[in-house]
Amino acid sequence: MCEVIQIAKKDLRTFFLTPQAAVIFTGFLLLAEYFFLNYLGNFNLAIQKASGGSYLGMEKINLNQWVVENYYMTLMVFNIILVPLIIIRSVVEEKKLGTWDLLLNYPLSDWQLAKGKYLGTLLPVLAMQFVAGLLPFSLLLFANVEVPIVLTGFLALLLNCSLLVAGCLALSFVCNNPLTAGFLSFIFISVAFSLQLALGKVSVDLANFINLWSPLSQAKVLIRGELSLESLSFHLLLIIVFLIIFKQLISFYRQTR
Amino acid sequence: MLEIHNLCKQYADYQALQGLNLQAKQGEIIGLLGPNGSGKSTTLKILAGILTPTLGEIKWKGESVITNSLSFRKKLAYVPEKSAIYPELNVSEYLNFMFRLAGNSKAEAKLKLEQAIEKFQLASVAKKLCANLSKGYQQRLMLAQALMRSPELLLLDEPNTGLDPVQIRELIDLLTAEAPKMIIILSSHQLREVELLCSRVIGISKGHKIFDQVLPKEHGERVDLETLYQQTI
Image (spheres, each protein chain N blue to C red):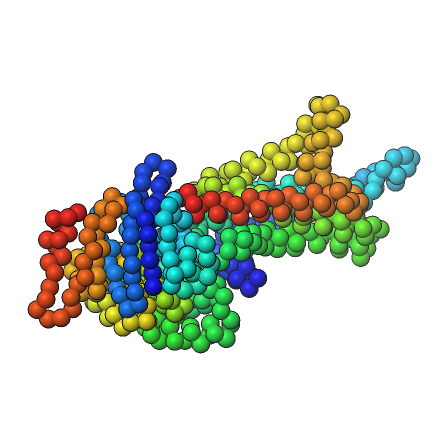
């Protein structure tokens, strides 16, 4: 475990020592804050409009839905850009620097390498999403927000990041060029998210199947405040599957390179 | 101590190694000679555990290396041809990370780090970023990360590439001093340096062993490596 933590610590450190990290971190947080304030502003505007009129439709204006749910969904969509930006600095960068071969020579099992690189890639994304994901907690101080929705929404955000990073890491391992790795990750997340768009255009059976395998659908369940075992299992299962694929790719790399 | 039997490596489109055999014992410095693409780096990478052979057997003290790869990798260290450094880390951080990655404790790392910085004369650049080091210092750093682990088998891929004559002399002195405790296998194109450093040379061409020659170190006795190389490879 110590070696896994060493790799993760090194990756976290080397990421935050680069000027790109400061730009990505600041840009992401500013954008997240803009969206949060925007949803909050829209909510206030809707309240004012409703209270100035006949109060009709007032019951539909819900802070949890208008601000918390929308905000967490937006943060998840940000992963389309955020995850590829971090992925390009992960294994592909190590291959380019020649440090990957050196790591393979150290007395580390392929599992330790896979877990270490996964943690090292995940932590910067998680750190950014963690900080941004805390904003809805501020609503607990002065508004009537349902605590379970904020908590499960926050959990959904972190699980979604963990899942996408695991998938993109396995995918990026087959690349030798950081840009290709970033592009493939972008396509992977876009396709995973756009499964949602097909829901209205397919049969009920197919829609149920897509719902079961769509990261956004599964995250939505949690964001609505439902601590669903199915959704939790979906995330954990896919993270494990992607990690196994990543580990197998490392073993395959030793055999076929 | 180290036995290689019928080592073969097939890449997608060509056969890099075709039945290489080799035995080595402690204290030997073996130089692998051969043109580009002859299989020198592949041999070193297989021994380093980076690649797995298509066929063949490697034994360390009688035990199969391929089935006990993890425990074997604890006993060896590898220096790649291209300096494998993390540009964002400084020299101390890099050495500390590499040493701890080999499963050593924080206290051990602190002690070894001080010793390595002194031994490899890295004190003046200890806080300098790896990205800003000269080729000579980068090579020293690579050797430091390898020798800090006190390996029993040291593998060096073209260790003198890009070094000036003074740095090559330092490298030869350093490796000669370390040699009695381990087996050193290196690949090189520099016949003169190989002659000065190695106790034995093995010529490889197209994945085959062409010659295996012991180099006598006594005065007066000398093998003309250049003629041997030109005649056989």
